[in-house]
Amino acid sequence: MAFFTTSDNAQIYYEEHGAGEPLIFVHGWSCNHNFFKYQTGEFAKNYRVILYDLRGHGQSDRGPVTERNMNLKRFAADLHELIEHLGLKEVNVVGWSMGTSTLLAYAREFHCEYIRKMCFIDMTPKLLNDEGWKLGQSGSFTQEQNIMFLALLGSSWEAAANMFVPNIFAKGYSKEADEYKWALGQALDNIPHCMTNMWIAMAYEDFRPVLPTIQVPVLLAYSGDGLIYGPAHGEYMQANLGGESKLVIFPGCGHGLFLEDPQKFNRELAAFLQ
Image (cartoon, rainbow, N blue to C red; front, side):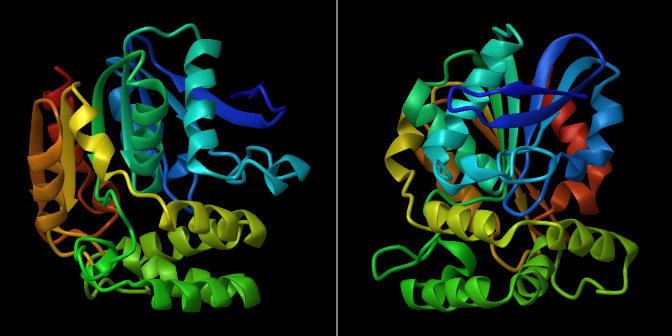
């Protein structure tokens, strides 16, 4: 457990487990490194597992520095600086949701420098739907709906978290389940202005032009019964990536498929990395 200081003086929390080839996990919006609790010990048997909290999340900086530079370009720079801080050269990276957006921003800004392989978990390259794009969030989340969600974020983080967290899980997932209650508790711990700024930053990005530039191998893990993404999103990513990729669908799982079926996810990721 440690911290490093970024070039703009943000304190970023990270921790390392195991030894071997580096394997970095990047969490999603309103979450933290603990969401990879079912992957950490398993992969630490064979890899140098590195977990960290994005700025404004978890144990990383939530102070005045988060009043600025809360965007995906800066998140990509934080990852790049973490890799250089640790002296890594050949790195495997796994991004979930906004973690995938962070990796796409990294590919745009740093051209996959230091990256050996990537894994994208259940994310679209463009979140907002419009007349020419129906593979955004839920296939129907538009500019108008986004403004309504931002209004909710601005008025009640608790209400926004209670609206968002069900989307982590598969359709019909019980809100009485321990995993659901745990995820909601983690989300409620966040700082509203950080969540609002990062939602805005994520919602208005369009990474479709970046996909063909990614030449490293990519594992695409997508939900089979999710509320916001699904097989069609994974198929689009696979069709447009510039290099080799493998698409794996997780039946019965939602957005947090690595939480819902960790055995299958761990097995697929281990095979891909090998």
